[in-house]
Amino acid sequence: MIISEKLRSTNRAEYILYMWQVEDLLRAYNFDVERLTTEYISQFKLSDEEKQKMAQWYADLSQMMLSEGLRTKGHLQIIKNTLSELEELHNKLLQSEKFPYYRQMYYKVLPYIVELRSKTGTQKGNCVEQNESTELETLFNALYGTLLLRLQHKEISAQTTQATEDISTFLGQLSDYYFKDKQKPIEF
Image (cartoon, rainbow, N blue to C red; front, side, top):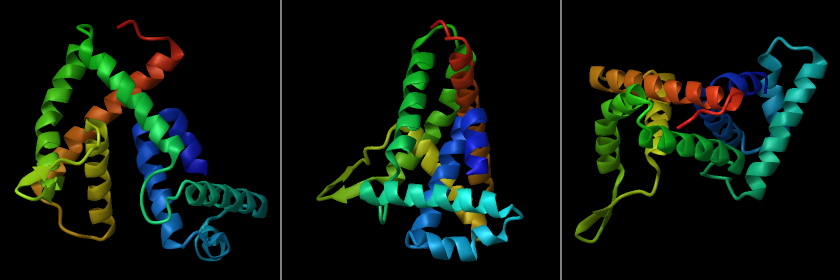
């Protein structure tokens, strides 16, 4: 809750990744907020009031996830909306001649998008059917997958580490543009 609020107002890319972690945490606890409070929230050095607020936040998110049918997979609509806002801004930045550095960073991560999509396609008969995620979703999925590997203490190749750094830089730049646009609308 505390981290979520901070990231929501400072880094939209990290906010999305954090909220994906929260969704997985709730799934891991099978949406049992009482158990989550006892086993997870109790570890934080917070006042009883703060712990209660945090438990309520997790309870509210659990309810939202269950009502949206996200028991086993998928993301909350509020997170999808955040991603859609970034996608809209991303497309405007790419189409504008005023942001050559952004376009250059995009072309640097584009090979990763192509490679990731080729690896995540599903086999249908004799042809591979691509998943329907957007380019940004593909990049977020790559970062989240790497995060999960790190949490599992699995080895990460130098190539994956470089890709993660490039993708993080790109999404960080997009997040910066997002907040600049909110402070004073960007002229495209």
